[in-house]
Amino acid sequence: MAGIWDQLVDAICRPPRDVYSPEELLGGRTHAFMVGNMEASRIDYELKNKLGQQIMVSHYLPMNTKTRDDKLPVVVYCHCNSGSRRDAEEAVWHLLPCGVGVVAFDFTGSGLSDGKWVTLGAHEVDDLAVVIDHLRTQGGVSSIGLWGRSMGAVTALLYSARDPDIAGMVLDSPFSRLTDLMLEIVVSQRLPIPKVMLKLALKLMRASVKRKAGADINAVAPLDAVGRSLIPAMFGHGREDSFIGIHHTENLHEAYNSAGAYAVYKNIVRFDGDHNHPRPAFFYSSVCCFFHQQLKLDLVLLPGHTADTQQLLRHGSLNLAGEAPEQVDRANGFINTPWSFEGVTSLSDLAPEDRQAAAAALLLDDPAAAAEYAEAGPARAGSGSSSGSAGADGGRDGLNSPRAGVAGPLL
Image (cartoon, rainbow, N blue to C red; front, side):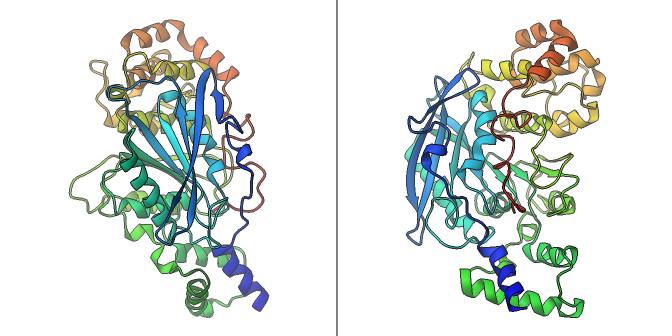
């Protein structure tokens, strides 16, 4: 029993650590790489948290992207419990062509950063605060968004209670309360703990984790923190997630901004797959649409610097073709967005061949490009979808999901 108990404690605060070489990051030793036909670069640096622990950070930049004030919007990516900044490749691949920089870092206790313990959001939220404070003080950054997966999504939600100035958050597969998730895992794994002992076991686990990692598992409860959140949020979750059930995200979505001073945009995108499965291209389309709106890229980027977004639309990475109209409406927030076509309030009001053009018009704010795209009809969208781009189907070294092949659930 003692061995099982130690395994349970380590499952929380010492999961497998992703150990890698900096040369394995995008850009390798030269720090330069290509995203499609776009030149990009990586800048590495170190920060220190309030405990004096080093945090390893990478800032990915799209080259030759021009903005009106020489400041570039960024999205900070927060990885899962067994992850690292390497997991941010899914964000890099999809956001840099849209004119958005990506900042990725190893939480303390993860990757190459200092620290021994993972706390599933309890201390990670302080690391995230250090990174965001640095971005705001060092200059060159306009608005800031967050993209978190699993533990990273929980961390983003906990941070949102502190900082209402985040432009928007993408929250992939968060849990609502750590204690609830732990009880569900005990039941699903049929661990030898009698039901009458579960509450006592949870109390003892809380003490063990606090003694070992200095974190209170009761404090990792984003459901208790999101009622007054004022940051636009897009939630995502796999329908077949057997590790963190989709009801966690559904509960968070329902509670989000429920007691806020004013209503903000919130949405939930459901997709097929389990916790660690590659995300579908439709999910990434939704993410790009969401950040385009929340980071106000049509106002920030100079004319002509959304051309690469148009290219991705044509080559299938931002493929909305083939989806049910109500799914596209809901996932991409079209029903919450002023429509540029007179009399149209939903994609279902458009002919199928016009829906992709409508998406292009919204993303690019370029009626001429949308009209040119519409002339090609569905055949073009179909051909682009077949050629695809790396990351759209997980074909480029698993950029579609955090480190393909990692054993066990990534919380």
